[in-house]
Amino acid sequence: MTVGELTQRLRRVDFLDGVGIYVGPHEVALAHIAKRFFRVRLRSGRIFPLPPTSRPAERRQALAQAVVGFAGEHRVDMRRAILCVPRSEAVFNRVLLPSAARENLAQVLEYEIEHLVPLPRDQVFFDYSVRTLADERIEVLLMCIPREVVRGYLEPLEEAFVRPRGIVLASTAIADYLAFCRGETPGPIGLVLAAREGVEVAVLADGRLVASQLLPAARVAAPADLSRTFARQLADGFVNADDVQLYTWQLANGTGPELPTIGEANLAALAAGRLQAPPEFFESCEPSLLPAVGAALDAVRERTVPVNLLPEEGRGHDEGMSLTTVVLVALVGVLLLIWGGSALIKDSLLQRQLREEIVARGPAVDRVNKLRDEIDDLRKQLDVLVPARERHITPLLAELSDLIPNDAYLTSLNVKTNKITFDGQARSAADLITALEKSKSFKGANFTSPQTPVGDNRVRFSIQAEIAK
Image 1 (spheres, rainbow, N blue to C red):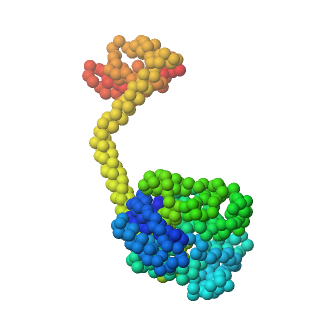
Image 2: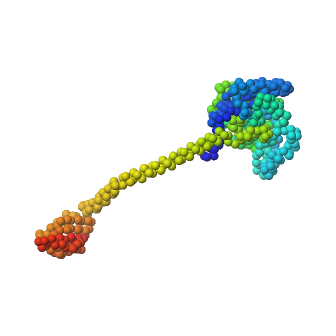
Image 3: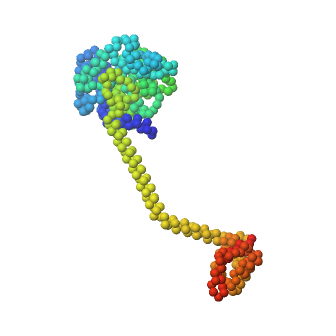
């Protein structure tokens, strides 16, 4: 694992509780997710019915009561909550701009927004997704939601003492859920989401929403119409159809338009092995609970698609590393320093022990070296006894015995390769030199030291001669 990969993983380490709130046309879904280190668990999920939008006062009261009841029943910390709204509440537009506009893109969109959506600038909240095109242009997918709509959600939530950190769409929440389930699996994805108000066809690539279109229910009766719309969205997003993994989901249980069987439809089962949840979630997940789960993943810092329709001043301010992550990173750093320091100390101790061992074994090594030298010397002396030698020691000794007079004797004899050295006593050592010179087996005879008288008319001598070849 590289340092970058380790850093990315450590950025996701947390002890957090998050809540996702998906408000549909006739229900509100709440999901509570707890994150402990890398383990993510769905602690609880609940669906509450809501009055229709034609009865706003009753609907707001029911929404507030549902949130308060859920928080009290499950003892949920609601400080990290993400609101998820249907696609029908938002207005999308695609804008092509010069690349130079990227530096001040927010200001450019602020100035041009009234020409792009049918509402005054002070009546909308917006977010955008940017992609670079090949011809020095950028493509901006502009997402807007009316302030009045947002107020209709935020006021009842404030009555329930909840202030959401962000507002996302059902499609982006489900995309976050799919990204969490897929792990490191790359590649763009396509979403076909059916709701009472129609069907959304969305395309996401490189972790960004690149296309989204809401179709009336009547337009998706024929599979061919849906296929053409999806192909057009892929073309608008510059995405190759062969690279796209397609997913479908019914947000309304039995009341939305019937979708053709395309792509992966059992999205709840994809979380097996990644999300800890009650068995009923995988077996019979309520349709509107899935976007709430995706929003809750966003709340615990598992977001992949960067969409937030809430104004900057209303968002949470913990986009960087959390305190828990910082403490864990610091702890890992300290442990690495301790491990590295201990390794250095251990290496130093081993080196010290090795030096002491060398010193302790020094005399034994010297004795071994001395024995090795003696062995080499003896081996050289024994070389003269090898049968392959042209001149053997036995004939040399026999001839030397004949050359030495009867009144002389030797005290030492040394034969090395092609030289012979011997010491002894004689009445006339000079006669030995003469005899050796006349011999065919020896040559170059000479005294190696002065002759020394020893009494009885004898002298001590030391003679060296070369062995003739």
